[in-house]
Image (cartoon, rainbow, N blue to C red; front, side):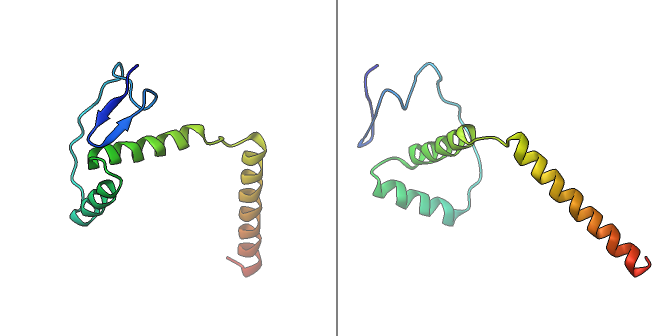
Length: 97
């Protein structure tokens, strides 16, 4: 696949697949936020929409690639919660509630 040039930024073949296309999103963004986004995107020599899309892609990929909770993690969380509840109940009984 050939490189696609967007403004002054060349997008490599791995970053854009025309088969997946694009989806228009309309949303309200605080003016101070969009001003900062535009400044950062401009400093990186790319359109702010492209910058936003890259940030969103990075966020999604990090979430997808992050390891999920293991059985040990879940067991530890449940054990901690049970211990908290037992302590809460003991305190209630000790105070006469």
